[in-house]
Amino acid sequence: MKYIFFDFDGTISNTYEGVEIILKKTFDKYGLNIDKSQYTKYIGPPLSETFTKLTGDIEKAYEMVAYFRELYVGENAIYKSCLYDGVYEMLRDCHNMQGIFTGVATCKKHEEADELLRYFKIREYIDCLSGLVYNVRESKSSILKYAIDSLGITSKDCVMVGDTIYDVEGAESLGMDCILCLWGFGDFDNIHNKNVIFRAKTPQEATEFIRKNYSEK
Image (cartoon, rainbow, N blue to C red):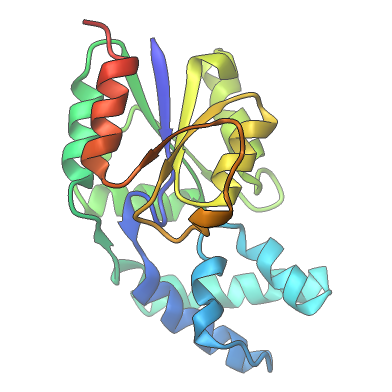
């Protein structure tokens, strides 16, 4: 059995529109003048980490996170996103492969990830969801480790599928291989980690790599 964990933002769904709207409102409220050209690099890592780096104040960072979350859900910005072309088929086909277990490991808040998986009608193709829980698990490595420990498996049984350096390094810290998705938000030209075993240009390429290398014939 091979356990394939997919990232959410930038891998399963293009969440930029909704996140961009609420990031702008959050930055404006807290007096941060951040150029919109920088916003894509804030999609993927935990917001608490992003806001702490920007303000240097962890308490203010969590205050900003709470404000962002209130608006993101309250103003329905959470639904201003869409599946990337081919992702529905990727998740369905991988889930149906013999010997493949599909999971989602994301720095999106656990409840929000679960809601969107259901909204996109793909929850049935996900065997395990591990999302961010503030003050419990926030980094990609801790989110992955929670999933691994819950399932009673080892990292060598797993592959991370994601689009950013946070996915790659989170997997790498646990000794896990990573498939890099080139359709997301990552700074792909500067990702050269040894645990990146494949660079998929499309969800179809990721699916075929998983089928060829991990599914039981």
